Length: 444
Image (cartoon, rainbow, N blue to C red; front, side, top):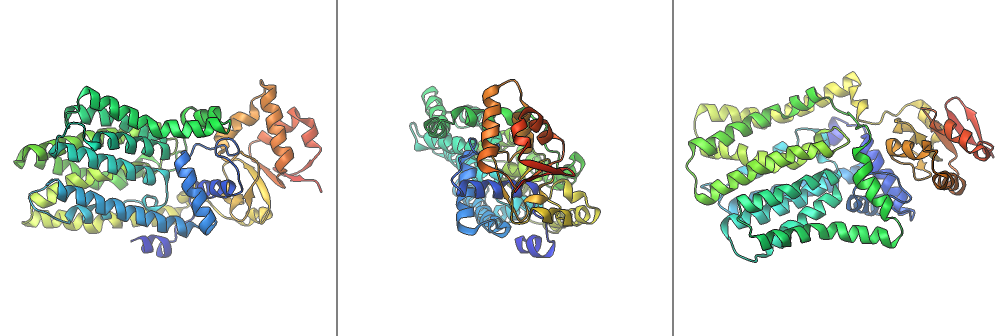
């Protein structure tokens, strides 16, 4: 399936992927996240992109390959959980098959997104909660690990911070955490954040880390890459089958006490997984990736309970063949209609002017970065615009000028007049550039 998406459907590079690759390239040049790079990507995700760039450079294929290994891990681990903790009457590999199919709802679920990396640790935390439905041991290591895994997940992708209340609610209601265990879990959850904060405090970047990673992304207008109608189309079938599976487990099928707890755990998990979308600033299918384990559980419950009969065979056929067909058909329709470029990067002849140069794009057209490198920290345009247009702080103006003075981008693509406003504020900078259309070229 990954091969089909990569080589047959030929998906263009996505705008977030371009951002992640530029981020990795800049970190490989010795720059620090949030201080020398204005973006809201999680600190641990940024570290992964840095390593990937050191190993493979700006390679979309490397992102797909690494993502495939993470997908494989999640599929194997979730199936292992269901077998170990007797989620179903029989040991079965149906959940692994179901989850593998679910990952191909959309092409962007199998790219190296912060949501994919962070959701892997949410899955690990879920495994520790599953263990508590069976073991119920006071002082179990699971209580500590639940918090640590949840905190690490949020440091990869901040919207996953909504799983903190999930860990507390499920720990109390389903797993029976005591007050002491709740405190231990909260402290463990905070540890990854504390270590990241200490690192940035050490390099004099704590304020930038706190503002760009946690505060600012919730204040700016979000990127509506995909319409709500398209998201509904992609997820309608798995959600329908999941609802059927839930009612089968809740009403039709008699379950053990442990299986009832696991049903409750997955229901609560689904609710908080959806709530994480409220903190995202990009409307994309990959933001839904964290809900896949719960969908896997409910769909598998439906298929395991009803093993025979024409109805379940039809449902299975629709799921196995229909879901990828919907995803691929939707993708091909987006490409043929050109709507894909609200999400992907469109490469045109006009972008050749930046080839091999150090540039800065002040706008949404990331095609100029295709064969060039970013200069200055202003990677995330909507976050950077607030910094570049902020006139009330003289210290901020000096810092902006120093960034341009030190890195001297050869071309500044000024789509919305932000750089023109900056030049009026810093006249000495205007002497170094000459305007051609909407672009500014560094004078030789």
